[in-house]
Image (cartoon, rainbow, N blue to C red):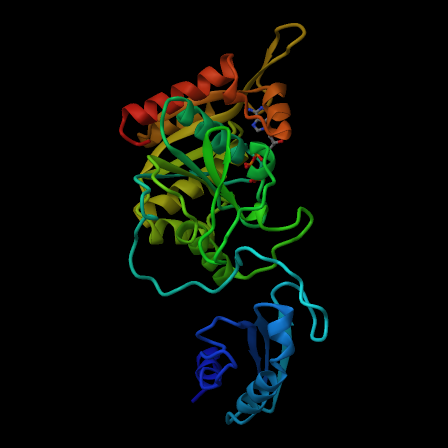
Amino acid sequence: MPLSNDVILAELSRIVLPGGGDPVSRDLIRALSVEGDTVRFVIEADSAEMARGMEPVRAAAQAAVEAIPGVRRASVVLTAHDGGQRGAPAAPAPGPRIGRHPTPDDGPRNPSGVDRILAVASGKGGVGKSTVASNLAVALARQGRRVGLLDADIYGPSLPRMMGTTRRPASPDGKIIEPVQAHGVVMMSIGLLLKEEEAVVWRGPMLMGALQQLLGQVDWGRLDVLVVDLPPGTGDIQLTLCQRTRLTGALVVSTPQDVALLDARKALDMFAKLGTPVLGLIENMSTYICPNCGHEAHIFGHGGVEAEARKLGLPFLGALPLALEVRQAGDAGHPVALDDGPMADAYARIAARLIGGGMA
Ligand SMILES: Nc1ncnc2c1ncn2[C@@H]1O[C@H](COP(=O)(O)OP(=O)(O)OP(=O)(O)O)[C@@H](O)[C@H]1O
């Protein structure tokens, strides 16, 4: 049989762990790679304490893999999820553990109690997707909806800052995660589980597993709508969300300039391929009105998204101006939709339209 990850994993699944189970079913194998006749992988224990007792498992795993025909050498490293090394003191890191391989696909379903899921997407980064997601969530909550907000931008979570919360979610049993509350919205972000400067260094399957956890292990309670802030682009997270949940639909955010629209078209194409309805397009950073002289400038152009929506026969949900207060409010953790004024009104209109259409 040719050497493959499946062959290695089958062999590793025969190894019995001290507390029962095996390293594959308990999802401890990371970064498995086969290069010629050399196999490399990491065994990641749940804690430094667990890692300390696992040297025999590491040695057994190495011996088992080196016994597979075609393998000359197996390099097996033991590490701990909480960053502890063998011999290091166990860090008391209570709380949920996010980051694992995905579970098998058992068909699309929403977290229990969640009636609708709206994905906020963009083709290109930096166009204001998280700003729109957070403000829309707040605007929907202000209109009486029970709203959840999930930051699925796992590599670059910005919702904790924009929603003004850094409180670590509790998980009394280490499995069910209690989301945090901010501005009338129930919220969860991987950013709340990591240190601010900590980077996520995961391949696609781990990302998909993490998203599954954020959807399935979080106690969302009863929600009329869960707003999901997607990462930019058309990658694993988008695919997982579309395939694993019953999405009500996607809102695509773009700035008016051509390069952003070009990428937005790719996002639209992805949703079409995945059979996810696009509920509308939003133009962000549309016009700029100088707060000093009132002059209106179209820094990124103007009207491109509306024209695109018309061309594609999709609803155009609104044009949101480029405004200093939006950036300042986002940085201050107090979304502009919480206040009164033209920006909050613009978000309120989009929210009302979604509620009126039964989409939120
Ligand atoms: N209408 C607006 N007016 C002024 N600033 C804005 C506006 N929309 C977004 N911004 C600012 O632009 C920056 C990028 O916005 P945001 O993080 O929402 O974009 P994104 O598309 O989610 O980015 P990423 O690709 O990193 O996820 C932020 O500093 C935000 O405050």
